[in-house]
Image 1 (cartoon, rainbow, N blue to C red):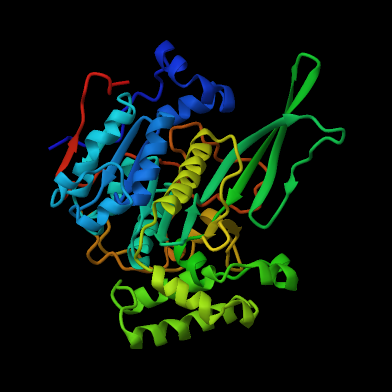
Image 2: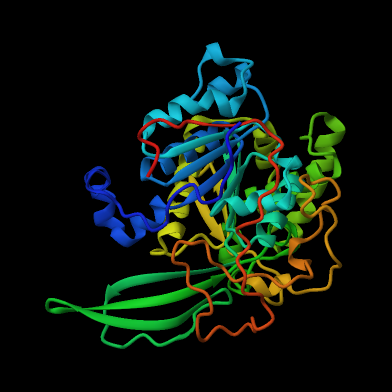
Length: 447
């Protein structure tokens, strides 16, 4: 069994000359400092189906420090249709273990670890071992449990799923800071709130030859999976515009209906005639709740969505997996605007639309400061008793965002009072690992 440690890599180690040559093109794109942060990142990827394959490929090729792939299911014949990291000879083998060799071939410098345990049996402290957690192709209750744990440990969280021609990406980065560099405009940029979720809190300049470069530091605030997936509505700039409402993909309503159906039916998908009637009723109500025009949710679209549930199509997994992995790289490097906060992919028109879905009230870490009593099951090594409640309602003082990758905390100008928040980083509390964990420890993996 591989001994789990959070500090797999030395965060102070420098990118060596060989790595500079290997990653030359991307270093030119986002800079040496961002590549250093990416190189030191320890990422958890849950579920190795077609979407997970694409995400793993892109992250490993980008040169992250360590990737842990977690999946307790075995390879089936159905997995062969949309995956490229496994072969027919591996049917019956654990899906994560079967993917290990091909992942490592993509970039031997990345430390790849396999965990064959069940994510539902992991204690909340398990997620503190990672700088980033990505969960794919799971039911909404499982996503809620994982997001609760990542919020508890102040870890960025992504969720994603694919159903044939349709899919989604969700991001909960809690509070994320990043820097945009650009040529200084004629009018100097000032610290201010740009949107409900984003603010400029610092502006610096530097000279580069004849040019003046402006470095704009921004902060984005996020909501939880539970709120964004069901309780939140479209922002006013949508609801006040009939044109924008008509342009919203009905896939958003259908995905929300699917998540609701799965929650009510133990995680399973619609399967019989009665289920289809129930799903249609839920989807119609979700569409109405979003204030979307009734005529955009057609019987034809409902039929298409239902026919695609549970399917994997390789081009769709490639599009969504590539988009999610690119956003993860941007977040790790802290150099680009991240997803905020829900992407809906509609394969009928080949569009991936971004919708900021937030409830009224505070966002970011301030969502954590409400009135739910202590959480049962914390620290006992499993999720049993770890209630599937809204992670935004946890009554606890949380540490500031510090992933050991240069993330800035305590930025000036932030309107939310964080004075009650603790200062100790939740990075040293490792729970026992209930799964069989192995690692590829070849000579090129130590960095």
